[in-house]
Length: 124
Image (cartoon, rainbow, N blue to C red):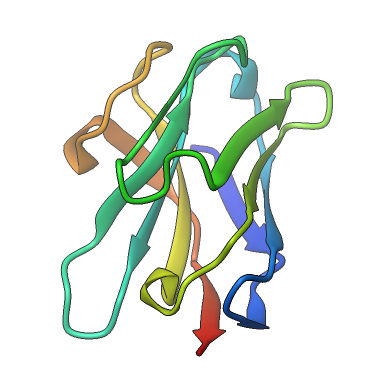
């Protein structure tokens, strides 16, 4: 089973930017879609966005569309989440996840492997 490790979280002021990375170990990274989810205190984990196995297809939650960009480098077994124009409501623990499939899905149950999460805090 693949292991995922997120990095790049931190504290940023509203309007600022952060770039999260998700490094995967193990084989088969390029065969599967990847996703990002987040969880705010007291709330359920929610879908942020996903990218297909080849990196050409992406899909985002409405709340982040136009501000967040997902990319991947299959040669480096790494997925990225570029977050711009951050808002206080973007605060939470961000998780990367590997899908069971090569195509994009948005449901938690479709993701087989998860990272430990990285904290993102946006101050107003």
